[in-house]
Image (cartoon, rainbow, N blue to C red; front, side, top):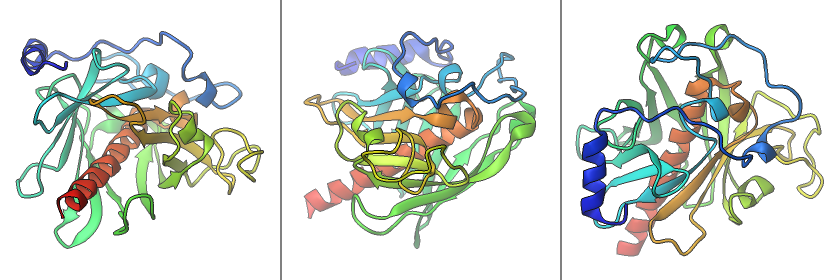
Length: 285
């Protein structure tokens, strides 16, 4: 995907073709799966008619990397490797009618829209996240709008908080989540990253009850809450790799459903684009 012409040819050949169902090929996610059996619930039907839940059995694998194409572009891909793109995303300026960030279900921007993110208004720093309805899925028959509070502080400060409907079928419910900046184990496990963000499920608690970082279990916060995702900026010498994202806990097992996993991903990507825009503005000043 480093050659722009090859990238264009790839996108043209995949326009309108949905990606194949993800098949787990290794045990990379085992460390992030909570102990005990997966939760029991009625699995909803996907738009293609097949059963689908989030995480290991959903639309995308539990771990994704974000890659920019070579050259001047506002499109980037998400996949396990640069050569196996599963999802595409495109950034737009806030001066157009398009959302500032659009996530597509497939390796090009011709696929169905999975989610969008944009500023709530010109005068507020909050972000408006939209998850479109999925045709043929009863519990996803209406689109969902989520307001994520965004701090006006610089990188590494503040929190990003939102309430979203998650779950599957009759188990769908509203829950509160919060992205917190972190130097913890969940972030360090992302290929040695030392700083990043972790998504905390505020309505949950973990068995160990939290505590000091050195003694608490992976996936638990100091205040005893569950971590369901983490992401961090690229920590390698790669010129195209932008960030790494990982589902954990309830998002990994499927308890939060496809929509829950999508909300985890699009909110992480939104924070990434906010930080990217901030860094660009600082560099230009």
